[in-house]
Image (cartoon, rainbow, N blue to C red; front, side, top):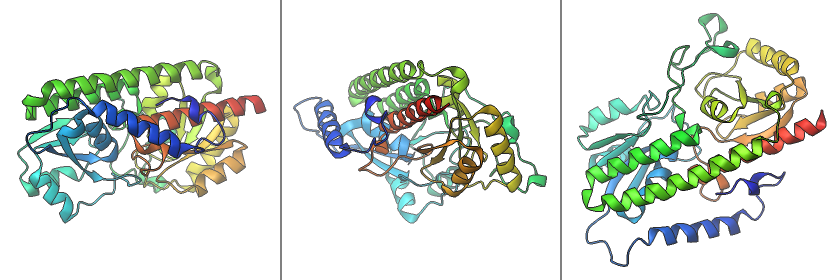
Amino acid sequence: MSLKKFLSPYPHSKRRRRWLGMAVGTVALGAWSARAMSRDPLPVVATFSILGDMVKEIGGERVAVTTIVGSNTDTHGFEPTPHDVKALQEAKVLVLNGLDFETWLPRLTQAVGFEGQRVVASEGVTVRYLSGAHGHDHDEEDGHDTHGHSAGDADPHAWQDLANGMIYARNIAAGLAKADPRNASYYETRAAGYVARMKALDSEIRAALAAIPPENRRVISSHDAFGYFGDAYGIEFIPVAGFSSQAEPSARDVARIVKLAREAQVGAVFIENMSSPVMAQQIARESGAIMGGTLYSDALGPADEPAASYLGMFSWNAGRLVYVLKRSLQNQ
């Protein structure tokens, strides 16, 4: 997935043709050998859409993946369904993020009595913790609910750094190999190719951002989901709300963010694919910042959108950030 196609004001143009090409490439990668599978694919459950896509990339035709929380759906407030219970009952492998992201999962696995292979995709990452910066350790006086997250809690959005994405991929490959040792080399080889694509995209993002001075890399986001991205690529994200995309900022939050945006000369305001644009539009209007469009944080986009895969999501987010920050710089 290349970053260049998203460095324009109309990154959705010709997307269907591009995605057709990607589909062909994926099919070619999946043609690991000419022999047909002699048994049913390994049943795997992934907790949310980003992990589901990773498992499909690594598992290919040797796995049958069920994703519990689908695209454009908030994992924070999710409630499992009978369909999810059935899928987990039949699964041999469960792939989860960990870091207290899937707060509903312990109840589900206990109810099902799941005894299969558990893969914690985030195992081994350097965890970022919520510091309370920008005043986002909201207390009761704010009337602001951070849905269980407060200063000192682990930030679960580790996939927002491609270096961590590589760790996720290797963990998933190892977990699949442990549950299905006959296909271990298949999973390892596909994971290696996947990691190579992440490395190439990571280099492309860094090269594109090099043209933007560090002091001009400030943006506002809906909630605190891009801390890993910011740490990795030198962008300061000023979140309106806490970790959860359901958290509603108070009037005092909004006034403070507008003041901060003016003082810090913030380049743009972004919304997220699961957030209302109203608050972001108000902040952009009152601060004079550019409306940057949509970023994807906790969930992938629909199947016909560029952000329908993990690498597609990363390319889209980075492309929008680079394009809008360059535009903001030109307007100064």
